[in-house]
Image (cartoon, rainbow, N blue to C red; front, side, top):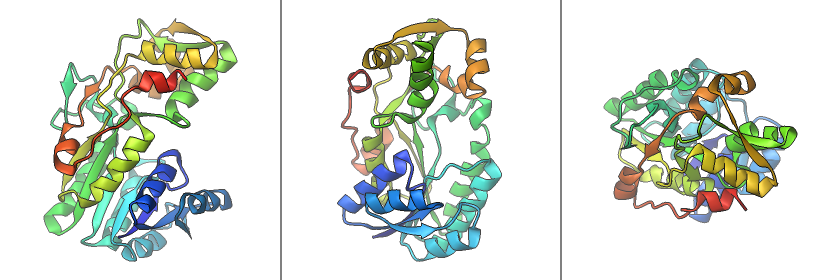
Length: 282
């Protein structure tokens, strides 16, 4: 299958390109700079030099493909929806896989799945309108699918590294909030890449949580990262976290336990990485 992918030079994108190529797909990937082009080519894709706001070029690239995976991070809901619309118009009846996120469910009060009510923190509240519009295309012959990743680990660790490990190296201690008892729904980047590949055959209108099913507490994650970095941990208040991190602190403060049972049943996908604390602590 020929697949066009946005966000290919990013953390998730490089892993997803590699998985798609491993499965025999031909991949074209958006590249907004020389550095991005080098990254997607190294991962195994053909680069398409275009920005996320170049809607005509996005549309034409999607039209050349049999499926699209939209991973690129937009700066706003309006930008994300405009890109999604151009991509869906281009791919037509081909599968369009859109990236959401697990934070939209807020605190879960136990283990929940995709039927849980939305209660997003402000930082991701804009996703509702975008995902509704994306999924509505199923009523008119489109094949939209939404993947909602949990908090990523493995490789660069992305948000965990940016907001906890690197600041911890500067201050001497990796933080957690309060007693650190809130759970994080984690997924290894390689497992998520396999889920995106599996989603290419999903029924139109499907939504899948991308989580590994192991939901350690924020304190346990901080302790694992501290072991790996040779640091200590420290408890800070949510107000202190907001001052340091901005509005994303409210997302990290969520208590989430989520299941990917739907993706496992419908797509035959199973998470392989079941020891996030071991990976983060090594």
